[in-house]
Image (cartoon, rainbow, N blue to C red; front, side, top):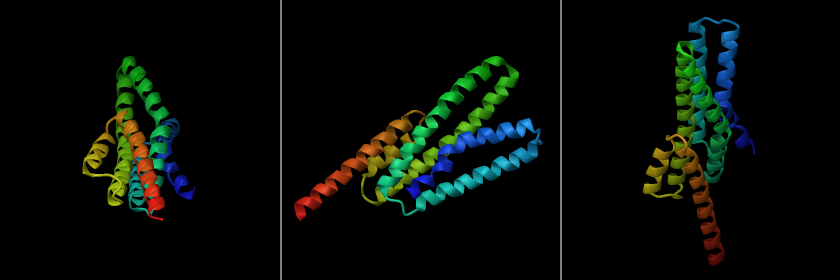
Length: 173
């Protein structure tokens, strides 16, 4: 359970990012300070992501966390898409906000995609998947909407592998 709690910062990243941005705008922090804060947050999340990739978490646990990350970030993608459309339609100021949302979404996509790549590496390292699936999962993890499908397929694949291992153990004993 502790391993799943460690994923909360990754799951909540887009929400934390936007709340901090709103606070920065409300208290009128200068642009350079905001850039420094957000750059520091991005570095911290990248380090956290590397930690998860090299952690001793089992393949099945990593796949479950990957699916949780995708599912909990789904409302963010829906909300940001709606806000981007509204802001883009409203004019010049809206275009600037739309560009900001695009940058945030790209970084969120990278974080979620890199965690998925960590899962794929762990699955391949444990010989749970072959090279074609490794390539398919790696590319699919960065495509919007398709990454959810890939996360679900990875979940089914790891469950299938675990069932096959259990059946082989029962036959051998």
